[in-house]
Structure formats: structure tokens, C-alpha cells
Length: 102
Image 1: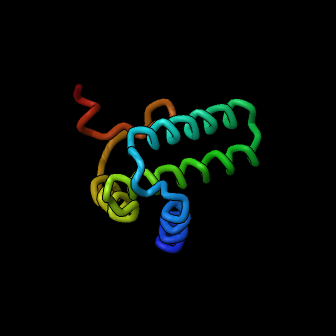
Image 2: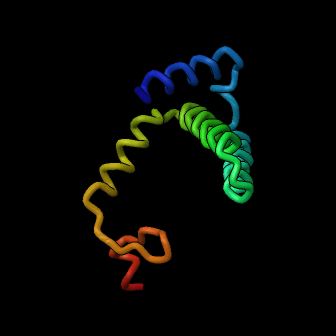
């Protein structure tokens, strides 16, 4: 299912010539969208939160594309890295075992 959205977003960015632009500039856009997630969490507005999370996803897919990467490959790599990870929940955040000993 994510592959359908990655493809659609990639096609959208190609149609607008975003796919060949500077990934550093795109990262600034990612940061803006992540900040909007924080604002939506603070306000408690679920609609704004959904929009900000979706926008962040779109900007990250384009960032991966501009960097010559597949978003899905990035997700697979990240999941394979964490799938067997052990750790503890501390103040509502999962802390991996390796970081507990620092």
C-alpha cells in the first residue's frame, strides 16, 4: 500500500520538476512539516495533526527521491534494524538497550 503512495508522490514531484532539486532545500521543507506536527500536538487538533503527518510523509518521500533512494527501501532498512531490538519504555519513550548503559 505504501508503494502506491510512494509512486504517486514520486510522479507528482517529477511533474513539478522537484525530483532533481537540492535535497538540502527539501530537508528544510521536512523540518517545517515536522514543526507543524508539534504545533498540532500542542493544540490537540487531530485534523491538523493528520495533515501535518501526511505532509511530512510526502516531503520525506520526495527527499528520498532527490537523494536517489527508495522511500520503501529506507523503511525496510529501518524496520529490519529495530524489529528485534530490546529496550525499555522510559517516560513514554522506547530507549534501546544499547543506550541504557551509557
